[in-house]
Image 1 (cartoon, rainbow, N blue to C red):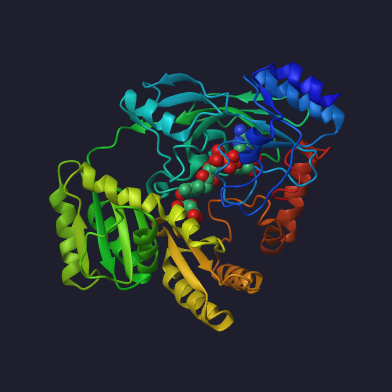
Image 2: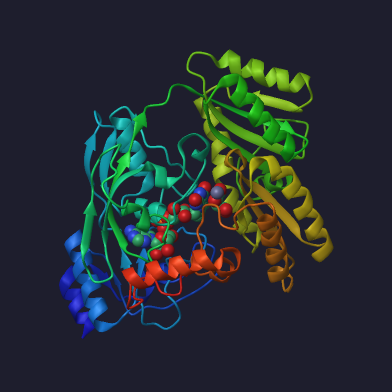
Length: 456
Ligand code: FAD
Ligand code: MLT
Ligand code: ZN
């Protein structure tokens, strides 16, 4: 029987069927869906992952890879059938090697993102992926969703942080491309198949990551503005004046700050005068903080911004970033919201917000936009709270996605598709793109055992 075989492969510490232990693995972070499973297995190494996959493939039983289960699209949660096996990478959390001279690091898929950041700083290097869930999400989950976070503006998404990858295919074959090369054009770039495919084409078991030199001193500033369009103009101005030194540039609406003040202890803006919008930024200004202050002063004088505070020390900066990273928590505490993880070209951001607010006012005047996000890279979380029992959700989401499509944007900028946005992928990608995705899925997973019901 399959369950006995799985238990044998992973050993006594490598599985659970205990209801209370399984419970947190059966629902997503947002608590949007709930599934069931007969077992969660925790392989200790790549060989065990391979044997688990082979056993499941032979039994025709589906697998759901699970990392930290912080994903926003319910991709890591099994369906309701009670038959899908959860494969958690949590025990594969070793940092295998750090090569400071080569600016690279080899890690197992279950490494917590924050541990990777710390291991990089321990050798005077920087791992350039940072997001609110970094204390619990795993690198395997980050790569499988091609996560974004706050530093994409300068360093790119998770995809850009990968030099090599190891993955287990649907028949148990291990494909290892754990090379640590900056340049490699020998054949197809296979690692890219597994990055961003949310566990539907293979299970990532290890990765070689790109490291950067440790950043110089970071100045953190918060500015108040009248519009999101002004934020886009400010970014262009600062990049022109300061060069490519801006690490993070995050937009937060005044309403979002009111949620933070309500639900997060100690969350407080450093301004007495309120504004409609705020931008929190990190700028690498090595010995030259005055240049940033001058640039912000100029923006103040021309009326582009209404106010600005540069954090005086690391503690002040950390307080500001703690607020930013608590937004999702505060939003959840307030109640259910429709999540829209969209991107549009920066130059169309202001138009997007004006038209989206107008659509919302027409469809559901009682709805409340919860707007924040990575405006520096064109990605906004235009989430919407609707009154309990409202049936406008689907209508609102569709109207927003139609608008995004019209502006040349994407309905999924960084969270992926998972289970919750699958029908939108079919609508907003062309038949040729969907056809190619289906061809890839059929070629790599002919038995449809890898995370079925997700993405495509
Ligand atoms: P999981 O949720 O466990 O899994 C996500 C998907 O990847 C699932 O489809 C799963 O099956 C698959 N998967 C997991 N591990 C593997 C593996 N080893 N091999 C193959 N498939 C696998 N996301 C952003 O992009 N930017 C943000 O700024 C951001 N901020 C967040 C803040 C908070 C407070 C929270 C709760 C979430 C945030 N997220 C953000 C979403 C989430 O943290 C990221 O998507 C994260 O990368 C998911 O990692 P995880 O380990 O939790 O993956
Ligand atoms: C964020 O930027 O904080 C996230 O991606 C999480 C969210 O959308 O709630
Ligand atoms: Zn985000």
